[in-house]
Amino acid sequence: MPAASSMSGSGASLADDGAARRLVAIAFVDIVGYSILMSEDEAGTHRRWMAHLANVIRPGAEGHRGRVVKSTGDGVLAEFPSALEAVGWAREVQEAVYRAESAEASPISLRIAIHVGEVITTADDIYGDGVNIAARLQEYGEPGGIILSEVAYNLVRDAYSEQARDRGYLNLRNFARRFRAYAIDGPRPSALRRRWLRAPRPSIAVLPFVEHGVPSEHSYFGDGVVEDIVGALASLHDLFVISRNSTLKYRERPTDLTVVGNELGVRYILSGSIRRTDNRIRISAELADAETLGVLWTDRVSGELTDLFVVQERLAERVVQTIAPNIYGAELRRIARKRTENFDAYDYMLRGLDLLYRLTPQEFDQAYQMFQKSIELDESYAVPYALSALWHSIRSQQGWSPDPPTDFAAVQRFAADALERDPLDIWALSLSGHLRALLFRDFDAAISLFDRAIYASPNSAFAWARSSPTFCYIGDGAEAQRRAEQAMRLSPFDPQIFFTHTALGHAAYTQGNYEDAVVWGRRAYAENPRYTANVRLFVASLAAAGAVDEARQVGRALLRLEPNFRVRKFCDNYAYRDPERRGALAQHLLSAGLLE
Image 1 (cartoon, rainbow, N blue to C red):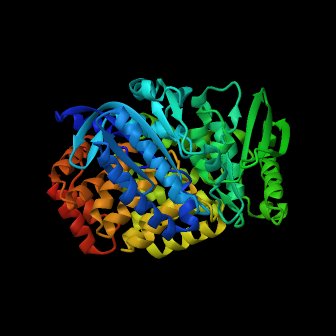
Image 2: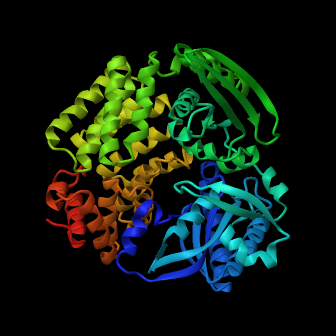
Image 3: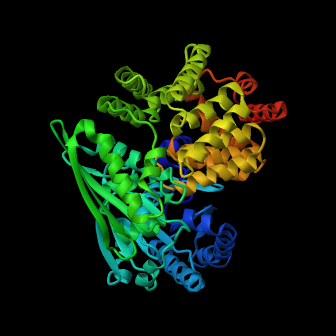
């Protein structure tokens, strides 16, 4: 999906500078199952997508008096003077792409969303809530089809009312209010739906388990159950497993197995529900074939809350034995990570993880309290130690630490404690590797830890993403990019994907590809404008690309987050191994007007 630059507040900061607003029709285009397509045939997928951009999408937009604002990776952002022009273009694009891909074994198919709203325009981008709405709306689109906001539909009703279907009111991510939407089917949609994007290995996604009687904001418990099931499955080399974070978006929308299978590129889907009463728990699960819509297996297990982890392992084992009979339950049990048997310790860890990256001082401090309570309840549990190490690192990197040396010592202590308790824990290995490189420049030890993590869990998007920046620090931007792209393939809809997008921006910056660095930096900034590790790199990338005015604007936003930021102190301690790279970073930051 292309970058939506104003998401989560970045557009608002630019609007304060008095930029002109315009009312336009906004179109978002997204490639369905992009991660699987690229993993199967990266060169072929890229070549065909570039041809569609050059021969269909860009000239078609001009023919409808519009323009492609940007294209990044798996999508396109475009604007048009009217909703009619936008819909006409979208229909032509879907027809042309369908015809061109008809003979392909794994065809490219698109979702297109259209909304009408005000935007703020710069030379190479558009900003505003209208862009955000279109970006979130496309997540509900069907392969080959077009989805319209109610505002856009009302403007084209006379021309398309017979072809449009009312989708009702949808919950768009990061918006409190609901939005009504309408869908227009693409060319022969039933044929498109049969064209499944497959990984060479058996592929599965585990959807969020519905936790009955619990408000959605407290659904971290059900998320934790799914996380452990996914963790067990991801450790198996013969499975392609979509990250749990990329399935969270299906929590608030009806489950259409066909759409989910197409969006994620998987054959099998596990869903379920959880009921808690007093001290008992009951988990129901169903494994379905997303192509045939047949139910392959159902199970219902119950017991005391203290039996939770036995229940999870039993579910994971049954799923593996159903979809990959060549993998035995004994192997699953051998490589399953060590867990706490204390339910409250597990619960506090999940609460802290839910708070950690909101990056407001109050919630950040609460996250640490949760991790410490988890440790107090089970001193042998590795994960809260690893997350505590990460907490101290973030506090230092965000400029919040009253005593950085003490925080660095805490990072070392908690990371060592985590690995001592479980040398095979993916969180502990990945975070320890990341922190060894970032804070202590021990790159060989860091890479060794990442190698152990990825060997133990080759489907861990977390391990792949966390390993990427280390290769930037040693000057290998291409390998950093490869690792971040692998993380995106495994977890394309991760709610914390701002970290992966930051890693991609860092990789592009390290390679001197400043235009791509700006694209990824802007995308991460839109997703989490408080994550200063990205904001600093985004400022440097803008300055290096010649967008000095915008670099100064974002630099002022950085100083609001980190008032004591100084270029020389930051760059002298930055993890780049090559001092010339640290010097170039300093020059880019200084040219953005930041204080030396």
